[in-house]
Image (tube, rainbow, N blue to C red; front, side, top):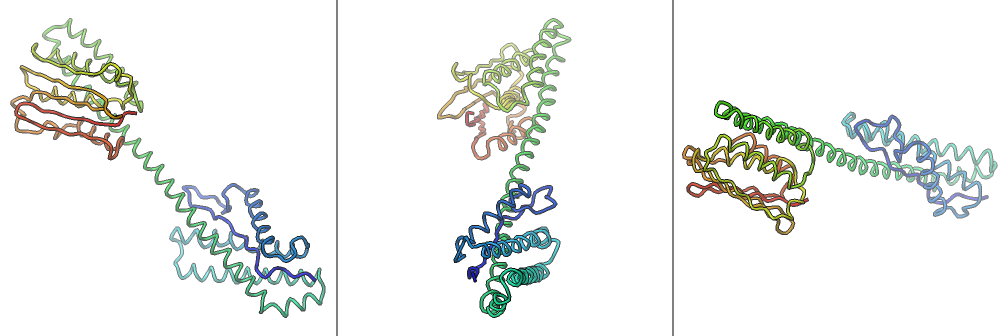
Length: 367
């Protein structure tokens, strides 16, 4: 007669992880019944080849199959009725431990009874007597130990997989939250800019209707950029710089003739990609807090070691000499938040005020 190995073929599996919408059945590989069937066949055969003294003898193969079947059964029952509810906080720890002990005991007894029936029906009465004689010395420990190992190992795999699934979901939620907040910030910025632009045209209408009409044409270009380009992840730097010039041209209509604006930009830099509507709030701020007469805004835009460095310096009006022009304003508050979302820990936005001049330095990585 052929005896089975001294250690059980332990059917082991990955348990189902918690996802926003859980599968009704806790498939081990979460790919359906065929994938799980292949998993159990391969895993059970692995332990059979490792421990069975005569791997190609059919009684050993059948007994290995019986043990693997009941270990798989214990795994699914454990995941569905005990471990999943426990990780979701639906049952207490003492009740979970009691349930695991009961499950292992019941499945071990049932697998032992099925092996006994196999000995009785196929291998004969003599083999049955040998099985009974060796039950407490070998079979009880082998069956119970193998069942416990299967449940414990698949439970550990379940918790590991569930944690990875939770981390993935948290990353996805954080990404969605960031994108939603960025869209909201851009939505706030647009009305802020439109208000300033329309106010410029409004001031011009009684003074010069012809120039007001020309300004409306330029305003339509700005509006088109706001509507169709501000939602893009990246735009050419040349487009951003064009919007700065458009805004200055529109702002000149309500500023004194001695207003000066000069921005130095290397020609090759304009091909770089930057997030849209990132530079305009800084220019808006400089115009807003500049003096009514003798306004002057100068700046540079350059690349250095893979980073974009944008600097603006403007004269400050007498009414704001005692305040920080960067301390308030919807547009500037938004740009700080946008920078934190777009380039967390990898950007700089610094300001300084010296006598009648205010300087802002922005540094971000180039795409």
